Image 1 (tube, one colour):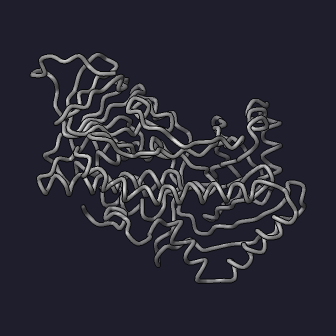
Image 2 (spheres, rainbow, N blue to C red):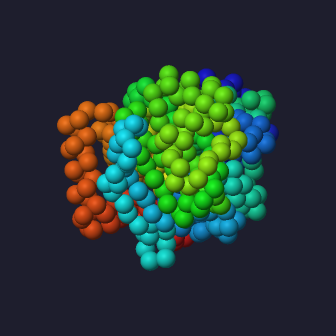
Image 3 (cartoon, rainbow, N blue to C red):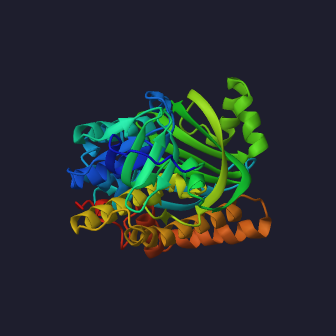
Length: 415
């Protein structure tokens, strides 16, 4: 909805306003400000100030994203809490099978001495990014949703929920999968639901996991156990939506019994820590990533199935690419909100995003079923990959994010 025109002399002016103080929005702000200290940035978040501290989820941070966090001077804050993933094991079986044969394993080093991924709690990641943002002088406003904006020839006028108005050269929408700003901009999406939900929780167990992650492909969907610091693991458990909702609503005894059937007893007795939640799963791809003085990043631009654990890392790729485009344009004296500048970011990220969306969609459809002939084909394929060192190395590089053409921050280099 357009803003009323009028006197703009008393409106706060920024170079970049970022809607959303999740990991993508904060990473974009820190990356830009770290390279261009003279630029004025604002992160406007719809959520109350302390709500991020209640996020009990965790995420796999690929090696490339770890390099980016180190370059942005956040990694020292995180390293003590980060659990390296030393090995990945993949199985394919029915829930009732007494033995789960291992079809694929690969070691956890992207380069010698560098794990291909680490596990981190979301709140630890947010804390480190927020601390660095504060050190750089980035302004963060809470309970400050963007309620409307108007694109002008040389700027964007932005209205916040508290009634304040801002003016900026560039507005970045990093406000999540159900992005209000994407809808305001009139950007359409391609999306569908899988009829599945991901149950997310943390479990404590008696014996150490030794940094081993496992993904069990079960007929209802993948069940992943991901190692956290100490004798704890993060669970990402895919079930049909109606079953997921029933399981989350069950009492602790029933829920832990169902969990134990999938987790097994190899690490001793298990106990759920904290809350458990179920999240509907689907695919979402924005038809456009940019408009004049407006850009989508992170989940606002794409949402994929967690089967490959790459959702957060796609967001970090967006952050690194967008920061590099903006910083280089500013150094050259270009208008950072001009559509021809922003299209460099769109070209850089669109193919990778679509490719990852299609890959996770195909993998989910291939593995989330119990068709005998299809199972035989996929298990043969996993077994062949396990016997091909070159192919396994390719998968490790993919999982680590260290592929050709990635932004400089993801290579561990300054912009």
